[in-house]
Amino acid sequence: MSDNKLFLEELKYLVENELSLNENRVNSLVERYNKNPFLIIQLYQIIVKNHRVLPFFNDIEAAIYDYIVNKEMSNDKTYYGATLYVADMFDTTQTYIKCKINHSKKAVNRPLSA
Figure 1: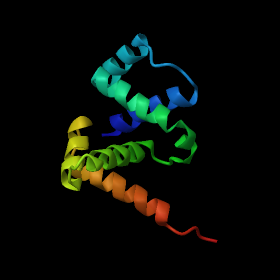
Figure 2 (figure 1 turned 60 degrees about the vertical axis):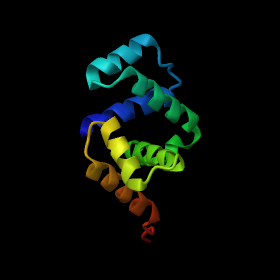
Figure 3 (figure 1 turned 120 degrees about the horizontal axis):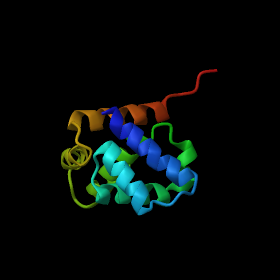
């Protein structure tokens, strides 16, 4: 499951450093992380679209999961269906997806200590 985090961190790195996602980079990511090229391109585009808020993401993995779940729910999927879709997309469990999203939201709402 940590492969997903490394994979998303690498995509984030490409966007932050304004590196294009050319065919060689896609092929390299496919080989290293065993991901579908279409998924790689789709996730890269999501990160590019949201590049201005990247510095504010403590956990890019949770942010991407949450983004896709919300997008799927806006397409009339239930939370259950959306999290199941994301779990299948990333070859992980639905429980893992829910926990990452919930943990991320709790961290955002946690008050700062003095």
